[in-house]
Image 1: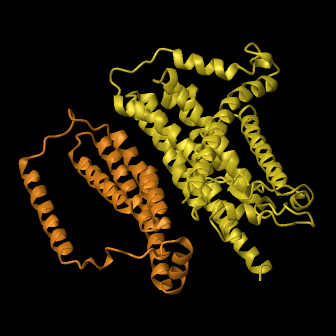
Image 2 (image 1 turned 180 degrees about the horizontal axis):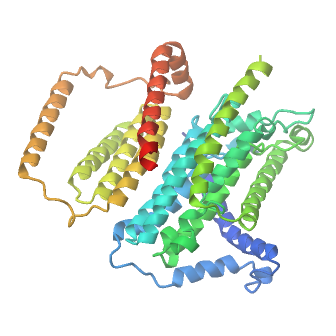
Amino acid sequence: MDIYFILGKLILIVIIFAISLLTAMYSTYGERKIAGFFQDRLGPDRAGPWGILQPLADGGKLFFKEEILPVNANMALFIAGPSLSMLTACMSTAIIPWGTYLDIFGTKFVLQVADVNIGLLYIFGVVSLGVYGVMIGGWASNNKYSLLGAVRAASQNISYELAMGLSVIALIMLNGSLSLAEISRNQGESLFGLSGLNWNIFYQPLGFLIFIVCAFAECNRTPFDLPECETELVGGYHTEYSSMKLGFYLFAEYINMFVSSAFMAVLYFGGYNYPGINFVEANLGHNAAVIIGLAALFAKILFFIFFFMWVRWTVPRFRYDQLMKLGWQILIPLAIFNILLTGVGIMLFDN
Amino acid sequence: MIDKVFYFLSFLAILAGLMVVFTKNPVHSVLYLILAFFAIAGHYILLNAQFLAVVHIIVYAGAIMVLFLFVIMFLNLNAETEPQKPIFYKFIGVILSGVLLTLFVGAFRKLDPIYSDLPQTDIGLIKNLGIVLFNEFTLPFEIISILLLAAMVGSILIAKKDKAVVE
């Protein structure tokens, strides 16, 4: 363990952290702009040119608002709730492979914080912990609506985690590895004679469909945002929250969106691979190919973030029983069927 | 280095375990139990058993404890509404845990410390674990899966509403 290795990792961690926060910050702006576009209005346009300073203004406003602690709330847990939400949201970026490695003056600089060989399971560990922030916050508020929101969040997350796990099992069968670096590398092979196009989406369309529905539910996004359903539960689990603690809950949602978009891009849409990666590497050198790959990965992530917003302003909210029915009676059997299909496919074509 | 991490994790696990028993609020108890699970998962990682560690987190901290918390939140237990239990129960509790403690101390005192310096093995990695499970222990593995299936069917049967009563 030399000092440069640790230093390099530290720099990478800081950069990734900053990028995920920045992306989440500008997602709030993007969300409002897109909502404006969908509803035929302008969206925020006062702060700075085209309103691009709006997220800073929002953040400043949240910081300076009055901090309200309900009298009957459980203080320690009331504060722990949003903190936990934020923590778990930031944890999963550690294992996303942003590229293979950069060659800086003969030293390899790997663009992934930690290549753990249980990468996919690590994601599920973090995702399953994500619900605690909401549950603890909702309970500690000592408010019936908050509690109902928290309980809804818990049952929803547990239900959709199952289908998500099952949909990813088919992917693991296909790749024979749980490591995200390995999965990304496999997708860099050629398909239809074009290098870097061996994406898992071509083999797992059904699995991807299940995964994306579950990702929506895990992020508590519309049409599955029942924990904060304002028509039934006032504000859901964050009814009692104000100031930056509310800001943390809202911000954690956007970070979660960024992270799950990144996972969708890495697991199903080739990660940092793009069509013609070998051609670029042969003609422009390794570093250029890796940097274009990074840009490609970001383009995919931004597309999925846009998709999240697109769905939010298009599809109305589900009813709670419909949500449960979709999770348990449709998605889980479908995911098991997908595993079966993948098994048969591997047996037939992969001898 | 490893030694220090080990002692820290053990301290955390024992402290959290004690707090589970000694806190008055059941929600706090559950949260301390989750902390204890994390400390134990840390021990697994020290043994290079990454798969076990992460499955431990997913299953216990991520699923079972969420359900515990779920139920306890709905019960809304607190110090005022807690029914007074007779002192007799406390006696039984103390005696039983004393017996358990003696059992554990006796068992571990006789333990030969051959595993104190375990070589860094890769047996806990998911690949090796899978190979062992599907070669040497195929039959027990399959039997456990049938057991789980039976448990699942049983729980659905219990949870299902009785048709005759509904009508």
